[in-house]
Image (tube, rainbow, N blue to C red; front, top):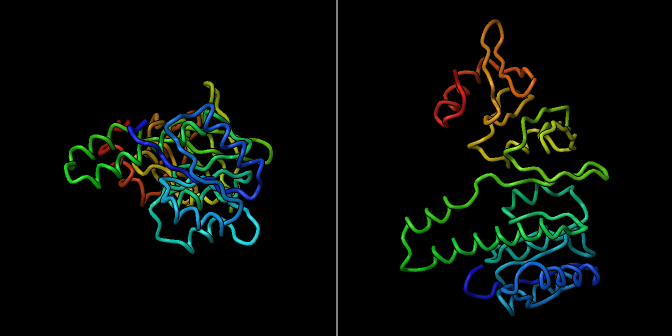
Length: 264
């Protein structure tokens, strides 16, 4: 943790949810976090933000009168970081697009919350270095490079929740407006179907790891076992032969070579 207090504000229309998050942070996460205010609506939150200038706001999405996205749009631009804490997974992609630190599903997992706070701490370090007149580009670059590039994503299908490392995803297959995600967990191949388009996953997944090989497939290049080029072009991932469009094939080969992924 940094050598200064991280000031945060909690925003949730449910008092019990606010107290629960406060207690978890206080008891299990880190004493360097200072909760400077709790708000039960966006009007209260706006006043607290003006008063305390927090480093981060932990906020629910669905709230009476004004949801979190409308609130953030109304007060934009703002200097604090955002961590969403919500019971709904419908807005996960939008949260990523807003460059939120994390998107935590209720009921809150202590491990997930700790990971979010770790990411918050790293981002604040970078911001502090950039703001410091004594910092150098090398300092900032070293800090950024020391962080783990591949993070994780939380996916929920009905009552089924999966927390998946990007590196453990094999590929994503478009199925109309849905996406089938194949991944590994505990050395077992699993899948989940999400009501999110392949294009949206392509936008948020790490671009140095994932490549769109076909209108229906986005692959994790780390898991490419073989490439087949005969009458048709394919890549082999796990036990699947996935089609590569002819237009994309030379670009895929170049991408694999450039990024030191497998290519024979």
